[in-house]
Length: 76
Ligand SMILES: [Zn+2]
Image (cartoon, rainbow, N blue to C red):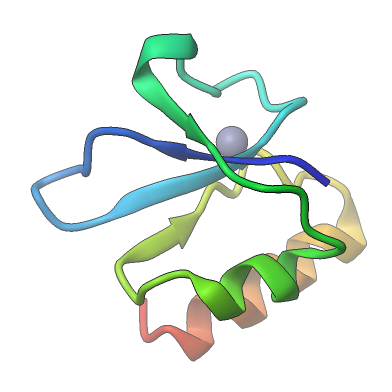
């Protein structure tokens, strides 16, 4: 999976993580493309704690659950 980080942090705090299919994905100059990763949990393991997962990206049920759990682990 290809993941993208928003270049700007929101409220100088969080940076959002998106997948390529997301409708909220910023335009090319507003995002950072990450290396290819097998899964969401894999990419999260290398990212700092101020990364929040975009809930719009992961609309389908299983992904939503993974997103919720991952965000909870990160104390959001
Ligand atoms: Zn998104």
